[in-house]
Length: 342
Image (cartoon, rainbow, N blue to C red; front, side):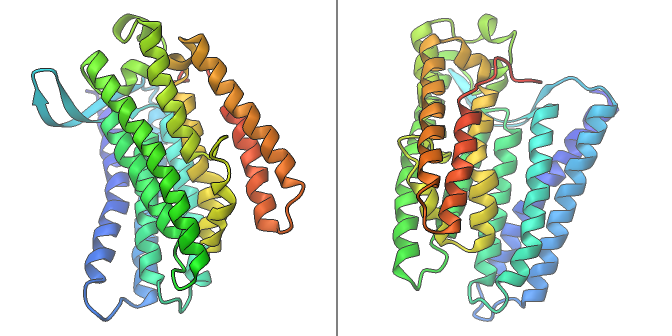
């Protein structure tokens, strides 16, 4: 491994460790009855975000200037059996690094606004703990090189998003809507789990680069059209739940019950687009099956039409904006790419 590749990997690990350490620090600090001061939480979060943004920015800059090729880095094997292994793989390429960097910048921006918006709020520390979980989940989804890492990020996204929707738990409506979103996310996560089991059963590993990278798919992965369609279907079902595609579109307006920073940015920019990013990654897999391609296009088109019509009859700005965002998600999701773009 050459020096630029090693530098990129080291800084990616620093970027992933930054929100993970913030989660641990805030969780431990919440054990005593006396909560941390808001200024301390703000400084800890700022340090974590700046470290993450700087590390990802430097990694992306090094990757582009050094002309590195996409590569899958196996950080560690969790355990190995006779039929395969569970691996902690990171897929390092330009598109994953770009998505991770943009997500980090957006999360950093919303954290600054959150300090002021949640000033003197009783759940101040709880909010930033969930915020750190969300940030880590987004980074894992963006850089996942194995289905295990992707599933971990997928779960962190779902759990933190549901709890943020129900953040104001002293009122009934946020809790009720948070539970509804959580139920939809459970269906989405179940579909992702089924896809993970199928991948391990059919190809003997959870490597996403084998499945998602054009050129290696037809030679190294699954050849049966039925198997391709099955995995693509469960991926689409997982994305539909997380990105509010039809028939799961009704949860997105309910997500606006959470704090304004999380509602506007997480559900309007990052959370719903994580599924679109996964569909884009899975372009080679989806395009290998005509039926899977048709299902993706229909789901995207139906979502775009439904959301565009629903946005015109909303009586409040938040709901109108949520459906406007969903329209764009439907358009983007309905045009799956033929390659991973690496």
